[in-house]
Image (cartoon, rainbow, N blue to C red):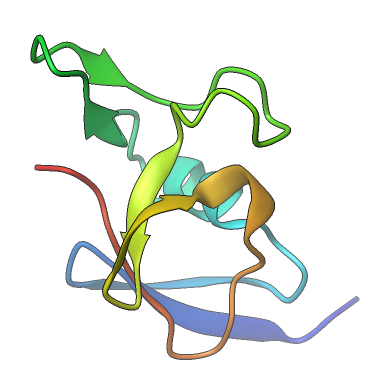
Length: 82
């Protein structure tokens, strides 16, 4: 088993196993809406392989980051589109 790491999701600390992708960490934290469409509709992971961009979040200040393709890192800060 890998040692857990701690990242911050919308201001809350969350512990996940090392090697977890951000989309899974968000789901484990109870987040179901990752961003909103231009029409205001809630969006979340769809393809799981980085093609659709529906899982886009802000990671360490970088907007439009694909959460399904980014591994969690110790101290990482993740924000959904509130």
